[in-house]
Amino acid sequence: MKVLGLSFSSRRSGNTDIMVQYALKGAKAEGAETRFLALADIELKFCKGCMACVFKDCPCVIDDGIHLLVEEMRGADAIVFGSPVYVLGANGLVKIVQERLVRFGTISRDFAGKPALVVASAGVRGWEQFALPQLATTCLFLGMRVVDQFVGYGQGPGEIFWDEKALARAAEGGAALGRGETGYRGSPGACPACHFDLVSVNVDGTGCCQLCDLHGSWVKSDEAVTFQPHPQAEPRWSELRRRHHVYDVVLPSGPRFRSRITDIRNRLKSLDLASH
Ligand SMILES: Cc1cc2nc3c(=O)[nH]c(=O)nc-3n(C[C@H](O)[C@H](O)[C@H](O)COP(=O)(O)O)c2cc1C
Image 1 (cartoon, rainbow, N blue to C red):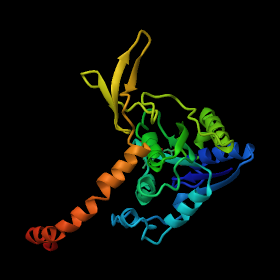
Image 2 (cartoon, protein in one colour):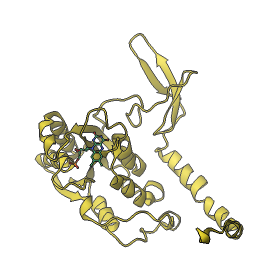
Image 3 (cartoon, rainbow, N blue to C red):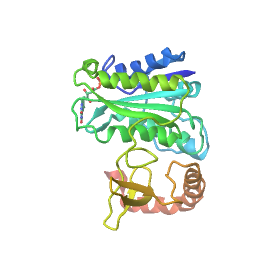
Image 4 (spheres, helix red, strand yellow):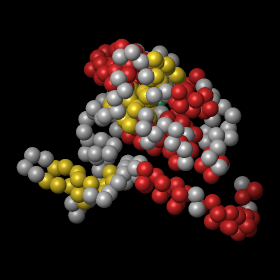
């Protein structure tokens, strides 16, 4: 097993790096070959929205560190994703990488099926709500199998050493990757697809996971209220829905757009954008 650890933090040897390293230590103890990559060390520019990677199924046209990252991810059997929490969510680098990998969430499936561990480091309990869903979205979009997802707490760089529970969980998650496990071992959450509690509560008793677009009903028993997806409902990450999204929605937008280019140019002229 080859386990790759990706840290999205710009603070080298900070809390995220440490959590990812603990996960790699756990993987190594199971005999895995491990590798750590700090994404802040490689140049990653913003996606420029050309869509060539999707419409032409080609590598990203921007010549920067994304190609190294893709090769590293291709060479790994399992991947640890770690981000610091910035303003309730994952940091900006996570979004940059998600966008730069859009080809692999749509047309190419190089990473589908690979197991992943998702960790975030936060400074303050209760100020981290969107970090895990954002970071795990990277894995769900790529078709990877998340084995665990959790937050560790440490404000100053290195203070994560005092969150022993999080470090132990990182090592256990890493060990699971090292053993080649793919089953989910984390907290169940309301949604059976992403395991987050992002399911809406609608007055008619229905609900929908806002991350997975999974529709269903809330069912009350004596002990609990649980979200039950409709029998035919599938999360947006399913293979069926991905294919529909790519081949029935995104790709057909190409010819439609081309047929409108002259009209768009004429309408732009009337806006006189150049003068702004
Ligand atoms: C710009 C910025 C925004 C932050 N926002 C939050 C936040 O919303 N919630 C939180 O719990 N911690 C926040 N923090 C603290 C970091 O999440 C925390 O220090 C984390 O452990 C940093 O990980 P690192 O050492 O890998 O950089 C913020 C830190 C920075 C620099």
